[in-house]
Length: 122
Ligand SMILES: [Zn+2]
Image (cartoon, rainbow, N blue to C red; front, side, top):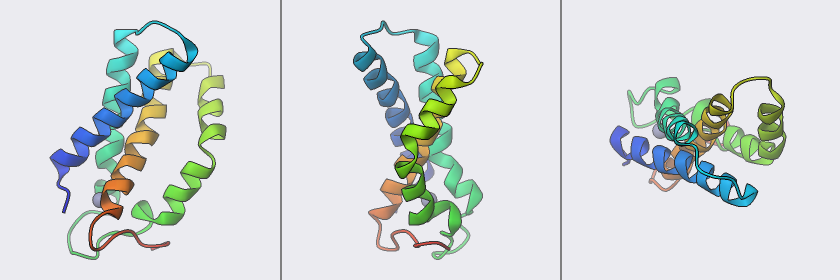
């Protein structure tokens, strides 16, 4: 079973990777503040599902860990990212928010690989 540190690490890698892929596609230079914000967003997104559904029992996974929520995020990710890009906020916050979502999804992917997997809804 994946522990908090594993989720933290995978979330940070996912968030930072999302940023690097994004700037690579846009052919932009790395901004260290945006990269740090992306890694932080990925780390926080990578651990938040276990705060929303605290691991107090083997069957703790509920809505925050659900296939429905993860699938919905993946289905609407382009819309969500465009919405974030259109917000009138600094770029590093946009990077944080987008990587938070990717970190969150990384948590669901890791948990889906365990024997308990993910619930469909609750
Ligand atoms: Zn979890």
